[in-house]
Image (cartoon, rainbow, N blue to C red; front, top):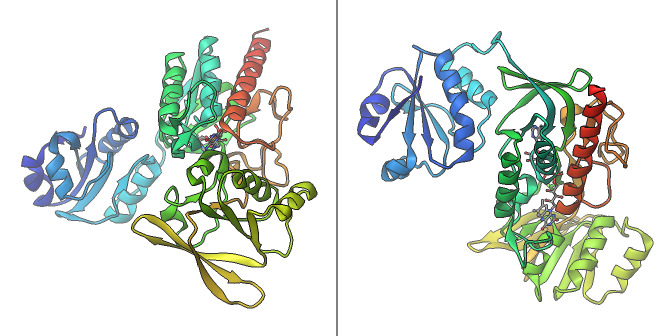
Amino acid sequence: MAQEITSADYESKVLKAKGLVIVDFFSQECAPCEALAPKFEFFADLYHGEIAFYKVFRQGDRDHSTALGVKSSPTLLFYKDGKEVAPRLSGAIKKSEMKKTIVDAFGLPDKTLGTLRKIEEVDLAIIGAGPAGLTAGIYAGRAMINTVMIDQGNPGGQVNLTHMVANYPGTEAEIGGYALMEKVTKQAEESGARIIRSAEIVRLDLAKKEIDIDDDRRIKAKAIIIATGAKPRELGVPGETALFGRGISYCATCDGRFYEGKDIYVIGGGNSAVEETLFLAEFVNSVTMVHQFDEFQANKTAAEQALKNPKIKVLWSHEPRAFHADTKGFSGLEVENLKTGERKVLTGGAGVFVFVGYVPQTQLFAGQLPTDRWGGAEADPMTLETKMPGVFIAGDLRSKPFKQITTAVSDGTVAALSAQKYLRSLAG
Ligand SMILES: Cc1cc2nc3c(=O)[nH]c(=O)nc-3n(C[C@H](O)[C@H](O)[C@H](O)COP(=O)(O)OP(=O)(O)OC[C@H]3O[C@@H](n4cnc5c(N)ncnc54)[C@H](O)[C@@H]3O)c2cc1C
């Protein structure tokens, strides 16, 4: 079992200790810390006598943690003979990441092989705890269905990344995305649905309705709702990741209003890029679209409207090559003319919207369920049941034109009610 230590013990137990040590800096009221705790104990038991496992309460030892450069909870530090020997792990730490570090950095064998899986039987398993999954959880919990939700990170989904949500009914003017999802998560848990956080699904067998989590747990369900969402497609251009939320956005509906009266750039020229640009042009001062082709790949009406709009200019046959930053965030967009190879940096714009598509998160069940040509999962639009009986889908992973919190919540409702009906049919 891991032992809790303080800064007073750190030198003797960690920095001057011979051998292998892992330290977990944790905080209270920290969901990923709670999610990590059982995994930490799992490894502490498995490698008992070979690795010393310590826990440090970060809020109680703030100065010491800061001096060690530990800025978030949980954070794991890996020591060999008093020296850190591996990159630190923090946030929603997966069991596989811990295992990999133990094997790679400490050179110990993988002792998780052959670990017996604890089998848990439930009526309904919901994979993904974004707006769609959590709503399904609320409905299922309130219907007294034995339900478990499984998320690879913390609940909340893409909305956790949203600075402000202004279009969700009932939230008055604006609400922080994180705050909104905290409320939804609380409601789902209070309704009786359990949430397994930071879980890595290593095997999903939809025919048998078995979900293997990490190395030691198998959920056997009677019905499954998959709500793994989608991710905006990134360009993969330098500066993009660092400037996300600091001048780069992937959602006009969400962030457009922050650019009222400003000049902005849009990357893309397909349907969503053109339609989102028309929306943005209603309140920004100007939009410069950067598109790789000589014409839009959008529907004719939208394309014509964009071309006629005096606020919209298009840089045809150009592609972004880098995002530049200053201390405040985004400062310039470097583009290349695909015909001449000439590069230039566009400045003066307050931000960039990237609309080059979404990537539905369907890898988990690849080969088990059909997807459309854009990668969206398919289901009966009335019930959201897939071709596999008792398996439902909900939210942004689904093949559908509008991806918003309200549409995800609607899907969650439909999938949960359909699953309820399916479970009743099993009971006869
Ligand atoms: C930056 C941004 C701002 C936005 N702002 C708004 C807005 O203001 N208003 C609005 O209506 N919409 C907004 N959207 C869109 C909205 O967030 C999505 O439509 C909505 O979150 C979709 O919900 P979902 O539950 O289908 O999927 P997601 O929110 O994507 O949630 C999916 C969940 O599944 C989990 N998951 C994925 N894969 C696995 C796996 N293999 N195992 C376990 N768990 C997994 C993820 O961790 C996640 O928690 C915004 C989107 C973005 C990116």
